[in-house]
Length: 392
Ligand SMILES: [Cu+2]
Image 1: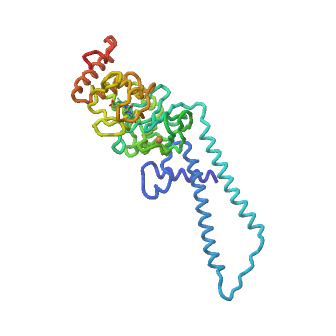
Image 2: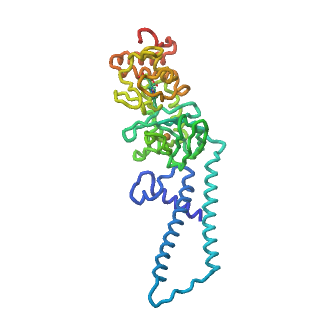
């Protein structure tokens, strides 16, 4: 029976694909992208159709008996038999078998999901309001971003036919790591690790040498979503990120490219890093008021009481690493520290980016960004010092 249902569910899956969205397709689970999907879906359909079958059967009998044995004038009510051994055995044994199948099938699938194979590639997942961050085995956190529904979101790639284990923890409240196409979902807690693993089965993207990024193989299928499935605050629904599956060779190329940000000029990198770290969930760059001060025109503004007295490289550095040391008056002290999460060059990049958001200093920021790039390229140049007097 299990095999039969497995086969029929994979037929359904092939037929539905990722994109076709006729009403018929939408009746069934979405595209399956991992080795868990066939048995999870089949078990679900098994439970669903058994419930549906018995619902229809019981309600049908209820109505039928209600009509057939209704009280009628002149017809004496028949005596009900006290006992019917055959009937009673049937309605005990059949459901017991059906339930036992649900239990053992469910337990087997569940155990497979919680015990990760020892050869898994380990990806560290860190989550906070309102951002996911994946750290790959080579230390890279992705720099590729993707525009989805007019919103930039981080882009995470995985290798096909490879066991991948996620070791997850939260920086603040409880979140939940949910990738529907893989049929995996697991809570992430503060001060504790949880794990989940997956083996993707379908390639969705390929590495494009010219664009230096992963692009969809079929433009109509932009890849999968990673959702937060535990309500965690007002921007919970904005925690959707893109997940793509590449061939192993393409994945390696993508991964190497993510680890190397040295060829990205500071201003661009600053924008990228701010985006990838979720800074824009709170900070705007256009002067509009969010849940944190805007970055527009703050460069060189006085900040009396802070160590540096105004917004400069050191001030931005401190804001990122120790946000609680100086809290901008009128704002809550609710920014978390990015200590250990953002490298020195990235901090410099964010600061230069913030500098470029003030028209008075934009040219200076451009010039600094260009010089720094030159210094990166020629090894023998002097290391560049952002605190040189003429820079400020
Ligand atoms: Cu969340």
